[in-house]
Amino acid sequence: MTEMPPIQFANLNGIRMGYYEAGPKTDALPIVLCHGWPEIAFTWRHQLKAFADAGHRVIAPDQRGYGSTSVPEKIEDYDLDHL
Image 1 (cartoon, rainbow, N blue to C red):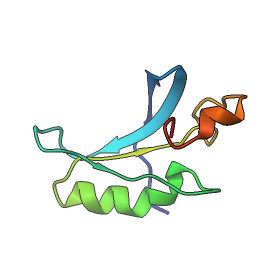
Image 2: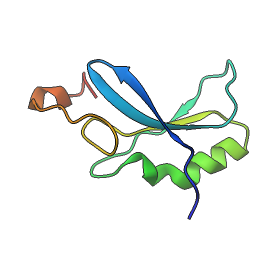
Image 3: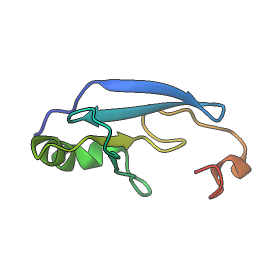
Image 4: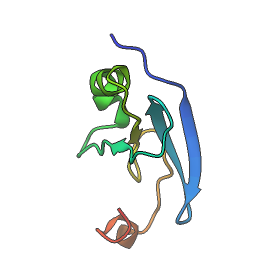
């Protein structure tokens, strides 16, 4: 199994979002890996390592309601505008 980087948290749009980040922090845009349903950011463990080893900054968040991210109660909090 590939080891995940340490989890980090950001408060965004009224929720606490957990995410994993790997690779060098540069001025280049990061690669953002968004999991589908019913997955979590752990799904991207192999890609996080591969992109970071290739010199890219990569971020994999747990989407709303999944993994270490807050679970909003209202259905509307999961529409495309919020996701």
